Image (cartoon, rainbow, N blue to C red):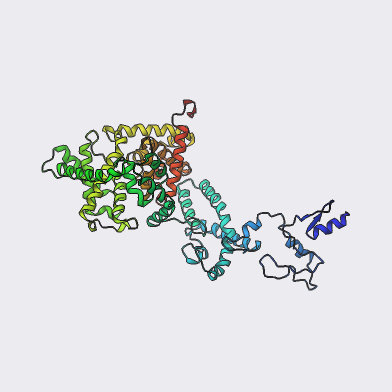
Length: 538
C-alpha cells in the first residue's frame, strides 16, 4: 500500500493493514469532519449542528478541524464529561473547564476573606442541588447545573487536600487548624460530598446500615442455646438498635445462654436490685464513709451531660444516684470514683430506648411518662450490666488508680514504637501522656465522643472475647494517631493541650468508630507481645 493511500485511509477513520484487515483509528471519534469533505455530523452536545458550520462553502476549515481533534490524546476527558445519574448525557470540555475555573476562582477568593460560604448555585441545603430529584422534568431543569459542576466537584477533591497542606505550612500560630476546619466544612457543602448528620439522622442511617444484620441476630438470639462466640463476632462491627438491649445483657454476662432461663433470671435479678435499694440506699442510718460517698455522687450527677435535657430530669438523676451508690457500697476496694457516673450513661440510654421504642427521640423523652415498672427495669438492668462491665477494669478505680497509671505508661511506650516522630513532638513541648490520656482511660472515651458514638464503641468493647481492658489501650493509641497531622502543626504546649482536651469529634458518626476499632485491631495484632527489637530507637 502506498503512503498516500495509507494516509487517506487513516484520515477516513480506519487503518488497513498489509493482510487486508481494518482497525479503528487512533482518533477517539472516527466521525470527525475532514477538511474538504462536507459531512454533517452531530456535535458532542448532540445539537445536530455541523462542526465547522461557519464556513460559507459548507466545508470545514483546517482551523475547525484542528479544534475538533485537539483533545485526541486527552484520555480522561470523556470520564469527566459524563453526568452521573443522567443516561447518555455529556457536557462539552469547554463548559466543564469553565465551571472548574469558576469554582477554583471562588475557592481562592473565599479563603482570603472571613466568609467561606459556597456559591448559592451549589448549596447542598437546597432541593435543586441535593441530587435527590426523581422526576424527569426536574432532572432536565437541573441538568445544566449538574453538568456545570461535575468537573468542579471532581477536581475539588484534590484541591481540598492541596489547599489544606498549603494552609498548614503557612500557619504557625494555630490559625491554620481553624482555617482547615472551615475549609473542610465549606467543601462538604458541594453536591456529592458526604454531608454531616445530626444525632437523629445518624441513628436512622445506622439502622439502615444494620438492617441486613437483623435476621442474623434474630437467629442467634432465638436459638435454645446461645452461641456466644457467634454473637460476639457479629456484634463486633455494631449492633442494630432494636437488638442492642438484649445483646448487651448477654454480652455482659447478665443473662444466661439458655433461652428458657432468661426471663426467670431477669425477674430474679430485678427483685434482688430492689432489695439492695431498700437495704442500702433507703436505710435510715448510714456511716460516715457512706455519707461521704453519697455526698460526692450527689454533686457529680447534676454535672453529667449538662447540655442534654434528658439528664437534667430529677427522676433520671435519682436513678443514677441509686445505681452509683449501691455499686460503691458493694465494691469497697474502689468505692465511688469520679468518672464512673459517665459509664452508667450508655447502659441507661440503651435500656431507655428499649422501653420507649426504637423510633422514639430520646432528647424529648420524659421519664415521668413511663410506668414505675418500666423505670425499675431500666434502673436494675443498668446496675447489673454496669457491675459486669466494670469487673475486668476494677483496678482502674482502686486507691491511686494504679490500673490507669499502668495503662498510660503502656500507651506512651506503644506510641513511641509506632510513631517516634509524634512521640518526640509531644515530649519536646512538655506534654505528658498522663495529662490527656488519663481521662481517656478513666472515662473510656465517653468524654471525647458523642453519646451515640460511645454506644457504638461499646458494641465492640462488649464483644471483645478477652475483655476490653487490653483492647481499649489500642483504641486510645489509634485515637491519638488519628489526630497526628493536627498535633504536629501545633508548636507549643498550650496549643497541643487545647487540641487534646477538645478534639473535634462532635460530627463523628458510626463509620468513624468503625474505622477507629479496625485500626485498633490492626495495632493490637501488630504490636501486642511483639519482640523488643521492634522498639523504636530514640
